[in-house]
Length: 457
Ligand code: ATP
Image (cartoon, rainbow, N blue to C red; front, side, top):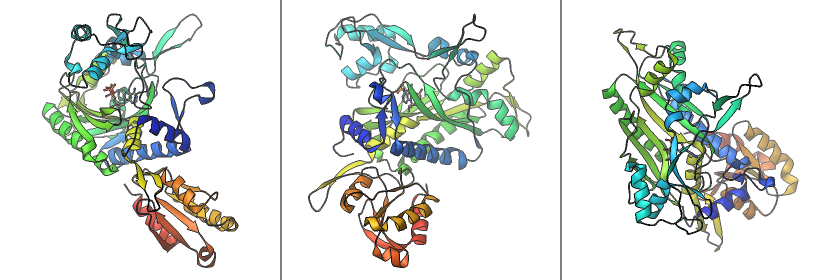
């Protein structure tokens, strides 16, 4: 993560097809971002390896893809209608809207634990320290008010009725409401898990820091249902370890990650921690792990009137399962990866190369096919077609070979394949390694097996 500032990262992403501002030709829509051809591959690969680890390879875990718009009663049962709010203040001078907790966190450089403060305590702290508006520099705030974070839309069924529907602010409820369906149709025995990857929407007061906090984002969530409190604490610890190991396996340096336990627990949670990451703008949440007791299923039983009791097939015991939740933003993890694996290296000839040292499993393109001369393009395209059956490849025939290597380095392509005169004679190619920049000659079949082996996760 050498020399990386957020400005530099944003410019790099815009120039290389990783991310563009949303609705760019209309001057954008604040805090929305579109993934370009390179970024979409990266994010899809990240979602794929997460799913592989937490569903495919996780015994007794099942996937679901629930609707974004859910019965509004879901959000009453979950507590979101009543309490999914943030403490906001408006600057009377410049009309900027700020989160009171963020103002204090930034002012105190993280030394004050805002999670443990009430609104009155936050108000007192801001007044006492005369914390100014970061936009206009004035100290002219409205009092703190709670701000609803759920986006509302409406479903006009008859023309005269206007039913409010919310865009889901988290994917978790899609897993809870399907608990019984999934248990019944899979015959899963507790403990078992339900996972989902999908969009969530939050009317954030202070979005920003590129894709760190946006109003529309994707979450990857896994609920692990178990028997009771004792098991809840056991699996909470297990999921902390699993979440941490997943990041290390991607290649994160453990010095850039930390656990941050929650001091102030939500009323339903018995334990909660975040893994925080050393972003260029400071340490911030990457994912959360919560032991949520039997709160969620119990609330849905109460609000829906449907039985959420699990019956143990061996002992006939009846109980509402407890839940350990592991939740990580797909966009936030993508951003952390874009920060962590960025590098600028000085080469032997004095030039600097920007290089992304992504794990090959998440690299947007696995192989770039580069004909040394234009008259080799026919053969190169034939090889590209062959390789593309196995993994995502790209093709480049413009500019010097050195320039083409640089272009691939800066989007993290782990292998570049050059097509030369020898290829035309004996079907061998030269493969160049992104990290060592070493080259070796192999046959096309050897190349396919070699890359397949490297992209395993
Ligand atoms: P934060 O404290 O950053 O607002 P949170 O504690 O509200 O996050 P959760 O509700 O636990 O977050 O959501 C789980 C994960 O979803 C977060 O760890 C983060 O990775 C991601 N996430 C949450 N809000 C956003 C957002 N506005 N934009 C992008 N990702 C988000």
